[in-house]
Length: 90
Image (cartoon, rainbow, N blue to C red; front, side):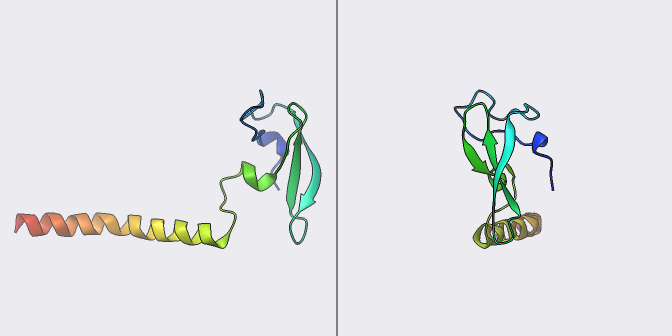
């Protein structure tokens, strides 16, 4: 599990927004089926948010599917461009 010192407040109005290692966060609870997600508390602005909100990991299956489709399509684009280029040159 990642140290909370590497995380930052997610409240855009907080003066410590986006500042890592500001020592303003603490764990105030847990979420999830097996309590695997930490709830963080910002001492600066007094807001609470989940650990997931601070990460770039997709939160649900729908987002995972979108990412898979985009990555699949992005790998096909160079092939498609090459086919178009060869068709135009011939």
